[in-house]
Length: 375
Image (cartoon, rainbow, N blue to C red):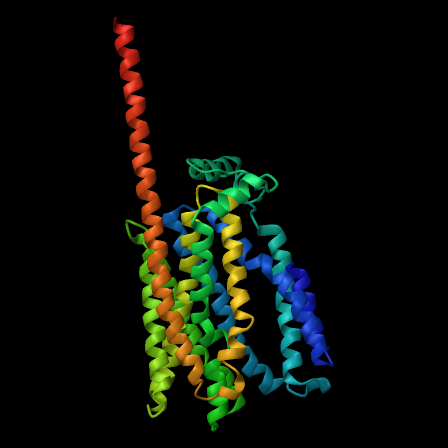
């Protein structure tokens, strides 16, 4: 999929009509779909709850580092390659992106580990492979069979699919500051900034996103209860403050820079949300795969039309509708976070009572057998 992704990136450099871009982006979307969800699934297959946050944070941050590098790369390409060999700067950018992508895809063939039960990774000894599998198997349904009606029944009869999908469908939209490059559009609309500055200045948001993601994800692993919800609360509060600062248009430019950079905190929720879902569904691998894919799918369903309605380029530089929408989504994120937290606690409570009850029954049976044997 990544090789297809890289070839399509090269193709983008040669387009002559906007319809070409529509077609390329459609097939690129199909190629990209396996990477994000697949990686989170693999992480959940190798790591325990107390290890997942940090690993998910590293994965998310690596993508953000790519975004940070991309902003710097765009500025450099425009400055040094625009017009070279008769190609505009944006065409050179896609050529360079393709050159970067293909070696990484080939690297993946050598390094990607599959899941512990089936891994053939050359860098793991047989002892390490068995340890990787055994330490996670306790209490888990590791079925790797074709989907059945029983799987469908399990998924639709539990709260996990509904609540986790809703959580990322909503909370993922708080990333709109970065995913729609609102800061770049703001700088372009108010004028007074060069193309290089418009490409470079939004990198501050990405830098803050990287720091927030790594710090928050590592912190969640260090808490005794593996609590993920505080990160989503932190993220929502930051986006609410940022939106208010931008809505108050009379505020100084420096405060608006601060607001856009603070909004980078929204990316901290991505790693935590998927680590949380992996943790919630750890006892059923098939359900876990469906839940992770659905979370990403429903977020994309919302994101397909959300920016067109609330963040059109014509609304720059103020994005008044978008800021109010951001406040609404941030508040909704807080409510849904509470819902997932409550449902997870309730499930653990019910499971704990059930285990205590079963233990009691087992002890009663054992005591009866012991008494009969004694007689």
